[in-house]
Each structure stands twice: as structure tokens, then as C-alpha cells.
Image 1: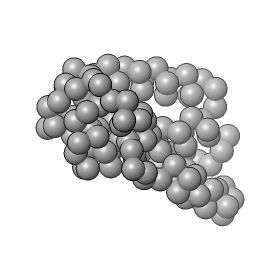
Image 2 (image 1 turned 45 degrees about the horizontal axis):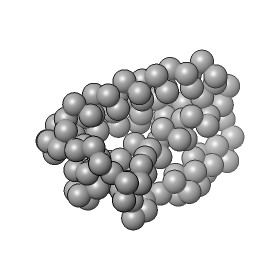
Image 3 (image 1 turned 135 degrees about the vertical axis):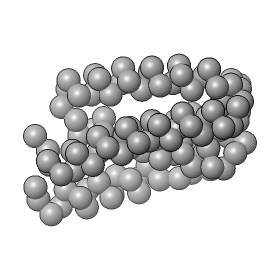
Length: 115
């Protein structure tokens, strides 16, 4: 693996870094209970930013089959998140579970380098 690969991941993370809105959807258009709760709670918003950042990085670096699984898993996770409604503890747990998976996949990919 080249030394520039980890630097590229850091630059990508900065490019998708925190903003005034949740990273995966515009808060000003949030209507669903889970989305309004995420926008209203900074800790959830931060988790959403990290989740979206890791998802976008993985989407850019995984091979095609991996991208399909990543998208399918993300859709399933979003459906699970919606079932939390505005329950902050449920949302926190959902994000923590998803972030553990995304961190693990990104960590494994970083160890192996691009295929």
C-alpha cells in the first residue's frame, strides 16, 4: 500500500466533514421523526455526518460487488433507523451499530489497500 493512500482517506474525510446540516439529508427539509430528531440533537447529527462520510469514502473505493452490498446494507439500515422514530436512544444505538460496521470495513480496506 502506498503512503499516499491513508492521506487520500484523510482528505476525503475532510471534504465530507461536518456541516451545519446532517450529512445524509438537508435538515431544512426533514419531516420524518427520525430525521427531525437527528437534526435537533448534535450528537446524532455528528453520528450522521460520520456515517455519511464513511459511506461515501467506501462507495468510492470498494470494488463494484462491494459497492452493491454497501448500498443494500445502507438501505436496510435506513429502514431500521426509521423504525426508531424520534427515540434518541434508539437512534443512537442504530448509528453506533452502523458506524461499527463501516469503521470495520474501512479499516480492513485501509490495511489491504486498493485492489
